[in-house]
Image (tube, rainbow, N blue to C red; front, top):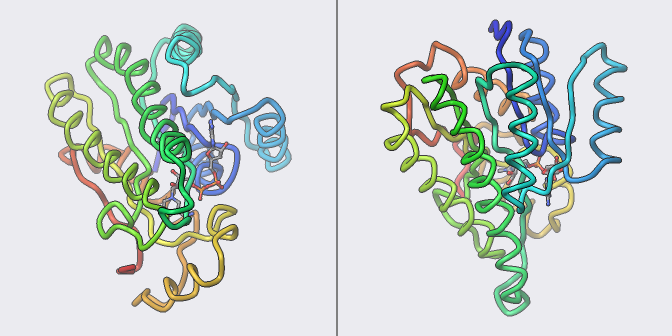
Length: 246
Ligand code: NAD
């Protein structure tokens, strides 16, 4: 894939799936800007990437604050003159049973997984509309198709991500902006390492391809959907899960 001269923003780009997505786009010659939640994690991701001979810019706007997000997006647009691809990847998960979930916990997960995605998307769409071109890709999850037997806020948020994806695909198609999502299965990252054994082991047994996914499996799907090879694809939720069903 060749993304020469394309400007790509990746939220949640400091580790896990997002960091691998950043690597893949840098290796495909894109100019990549990663977002993280704080200064230290953004700096350390930039250092890791620099040690691999990969150069990126990094910011840590509060994704829950639209004015902060839109001001950073404006700076990026003014620096490069265009924003070609947005990858909304930042997310948090949950695996608690409902009796242990407070309404604040529920709101927190919806705020980041859906509200932050809305904020970054809204800020970027302003410029993509001016360009009459753009690609927005969202990280959903396998649980957005099947639900999850605990941690209800997480699947609820990812169902909302799919709704946002499909609706904006239709709203923004006349402006030549494609909107798709990738729904990863179980991927080997910190988020999965934090899940209790009793949640993860039964999940692995359900994977017909017989393995947990790699962050690069997800990055490859993003590369494809961002590329012109996918120029007639919009509004899809692409499952990348080894046919896992939880
Ligand atoms: P991770 O915990 O390794 O990374 C999460 C990223 O989100 C980090 O870069 C972090 O900085 C960012 N983030 C978290 N809270 C934030 C906040 N308040 N503000 C800004 N950024 C914040 O997780 P991951 O597994 O790489 O997950 C990335 C995405 O993939 C998430 O949307 C997650 O729901 C989704 N996903 C992961 C899996 C999996 O198996 N790992 C499966 C399905 C979907």
